[in-house]
Length: 176
Image 1 (tube, rainbow, N blue to C red):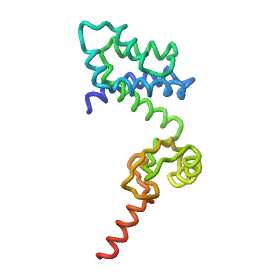
Image 2 (tube, rainbow, N blue to C red):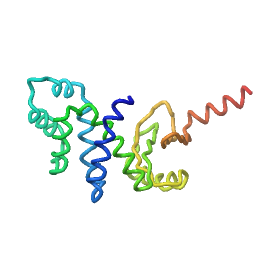
Image 3 (tube, helix red, strand yellow):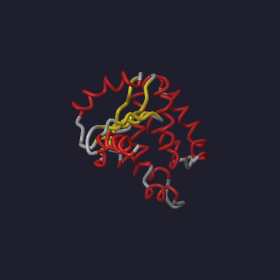
Image 4 (cartoon, helix red, strand yellow):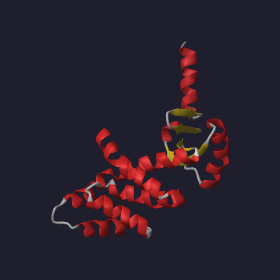
């Protein structure tokens, strides 16, 4: 949604500038806040005129599984006071994009037919980084329809080495 992106941009840029000394730390508390803020029930609570700002902040900090540093609490207070809680997931997305641009890395999603642990992911990470030519921040999602292998999505680039893709290629070759 363009409007939400427009609302989120100044917050993401301000947080990025203020967090130059510790971008990873800021990302570490921003992501959980964004995940909590995406909940429709929380947004409904925050939109209730009978609920005070402090009550909304207490609910959010109660749900987040980590203690939030002072800058995080100040940022959260500014977002809630300005009625921008719904924009928090977009703020996090734009912040992540700014951080990735600074570090020369990209977010990547690895779709796998089976669960991948950290060791397996660590084994394929160097090959993927070499293939895409940059540092990758990998996350894994399970997709049983792949049958085997992996499918990697980095922005608009896709590397599909799954069994499903190979079967599709064989089907096209046989019917051509």
